[in-house]
Amino acid sequence: QVQLVESGGGLVQPGGSLRLSCTASRSIFKLYVMNWYRQPPGRERELVAAITPGGRTNYADSVKCRFTVASDSAKNTMYLQSNSLKPGDTADYYCYAQRSDKIRVYDYWGQGTQVTVSS
Image (cartoon, rainbow, N blue to C red; front, side, top):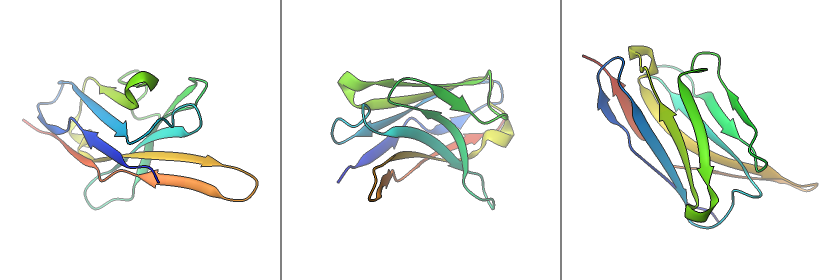
């Protein structure tokens, strides 16, 4: 089992920045694809960014050039640096870890952290 704990959310004005963190209960970044998802109010959960064990990153079009995902294996922590925030970025942000082998998929979700972008 893996526990994922997000932190760093809060209220920020449009144009501001936040850094979200996702800390894992054990070392998994060399095995798992780590993802940030978000769920805006009244909408479905969507992928925001992902980072592979090899360090490759992928972003939703809506956050490209504004958000940066990174991981620190020594701290078992993944980050999402979010800049130039917009009201449309308001959502609950979730950390998701996933890997698979020939038999099954192993995946874990964090409990989420709320981000509100408002003046």
